[in-house]
Image (tube, rainbow, N blue to C red; front, side, top):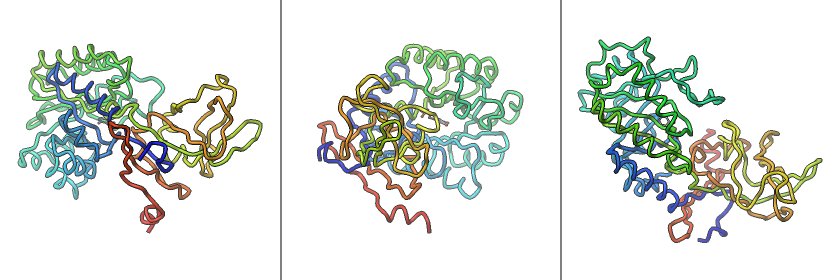
Length: 375
Ligand SMILES: *Cc1c(COP(=O)(O)O)cnc(C)c1O
């Protein structure tokens, strides 16, 4: 089907653009020998896992369900980290994961023997207490009081028996200079124990496929740790895999006036682009301009009852009218995995645009999908 024929609202995941990102990541792997795995929480479009599997080493999961998905649909290395594991899930987790990363020494003590007996690798998440992001405390695992990772104050070298790797995750949409800063903190605090490990995981948050990302500094960081401590290095980015590789296609339902021009779309910021309100950020919209840039300004708004369900102010060359289609960019990551049916909003259809430009519907949702979760 053609792009113009897709039903709306609809997410479109672009195979060519995902592959372009994968090639950049694969280049880092080839030049350094590091391993890169997909953090599924950012992008779980498993119909594209066969493509991703051609370039990356496997998957990273945040819990049992993601771990199962990675195991079933990618079937390569499968790592897991959770702030705490449930006793009734740990056996299933161990059976589908090969690297199990614990957040504390108490979790490690509780479950590590089971994991080791099953022949799995055991890791520990450390907290280097090095905040490199300003103004985004909710995305900063090093913020004061954070529940993530063992700080040096609570580090117990006497309990490291069986631990083959350390894991840190401190970045969010950041460049490699912040990784370098973080690595210095990791070395300063945990350096004495690095050489006794086999592997280290640098977590996610590396915006490797962004245009201004300094890949050569990333590679220097990786090589330094490989050479100095003889460690296998893992990265587990999520965003970088599908950055700028998807769209949300919507239709204008009505226009409205209240001091400003308002357009109501068949989508919703809170339901279909939740990170937009949480982060917050302004989604790119194809063919539009900033306020004042083009002659016709509209506040683009969602279909729900939430007053704050607005996407932002955008300007256009022509007035908008009912039936116009609008295409938001960078809608592959942290969208389909976070959407809700608040107000009974329909979940957007899922589709893939192949390399020839043809679009294929992967799934369409309806009333039953809404009702099923409610009783
Ligand atoms: C969120 C997360 C990632 C992926 O982060 P991105 O910002 O999507 O690259 C990787 N590892 C852990 C432990 C995470 O919490």
